[in-house]
Length: 556
Image (tube, helix red, strand yellow):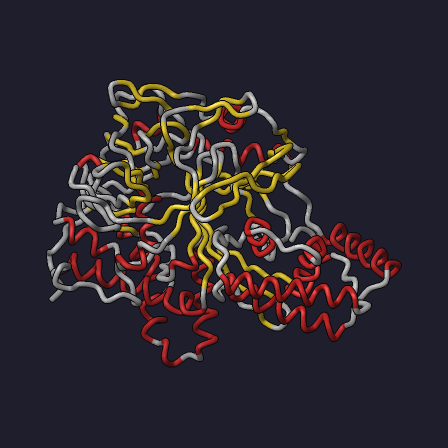
């Protein structure tokens, strides 16, 4: 996909015209481009990110509900969860029209449900004031009015409004992906020449299919239907090459390629005319992994146990995917298993079972000790959930409390669909490389989050490295990268994982590739009085596309 918009299309342009077009487009891009942010300004922004309070401050452990603005996705096919080197997970949702249409309704229903439970006395808000912030934004943006007036608006107008608000509420996370699929197929077709006289292996077939949309397609099994359509496309391409590159034959080949693409992607990437046109929502979260290092190419880096493609699965004791531990230390937050270990243990996405004592801890910034922002009492919070990015767990994947709550918000409400969500876990030394904005230039995924510490006697002890961007990256990545004149991290080489069935193998290696550093997303949860676990679980499932159990929620 790299440079696909400038790519030479053999059946359309002679070489002289191609050279002029590339020069002209390059000139326009250079002339129109805004001045890039100086390295000094970028450094100031990075330092600001290092100083801001992060994590969840609290007084005591109680249940909580999500007060952020991420969308709900009920279709597992549209969800991609990926763990890559650097200790972060990326969650990408491919937004359908139906998802965009339901976004405002979901916000309104969540607000009205919270409000009803508060007013009827079922729950009592405690500790912080995140619900009040949520309510103010809902009111200021007239979300309830927009939803109530939906039938008066044309569907296209309502969808446009919903999308506008989704982007406003989630800056830097909603991307409009527009790709010239005609040129994409033209670029992809060059890979088929090697298979005109030999049949591709299963691995080669999977690579060919996934290369139709690099970094976005993750087909891991070759069904007979996919194999048949791929072979048909290869055959037609061979005829095209032998028939003096006839436009008529190309049209037949292009149609076959589109059919293969639509089957392989289950239609989640719509092609409108010759353009792939879709919106995506991408969130990136720091994570803690197994408390162990491993050496790769002489580098000691965090070890990822059990790489591969792993679905979310039931907890072996409670028999639900949407598990919530009854151990209070886990904060009544989701515990999402993706691997059974023996008959009783699990590897899961879950939050911390320990917390930082803000009064006694020796490594948090001094200002954090006196933080009382959004407190209901005005007193400084004595406790803090702050994820340690890097080695920390017994094998599970630690996620910040607010981020885990947000992740649960994005996943399907019901058990059946939740168990169909797949997660992709790279080998320890393999990066998550993704073309996040669809501009044809893939990047290594990363996040501005610079906290890593060790435990002693099951309590946060001391930092592994200062909470400084450059010091942190030296510890996390060791070497093999440099900083350019804009202070961006550029990796000399970035190997990736590919997946065949459930296993992870070495994939493509990118060279001279930048690090994409998303901002840390503030965590937004509201604490309330203790309630039974089924109630806490059901409250996180609220959506206009899900029939909530009103009896469990005490809303009968």
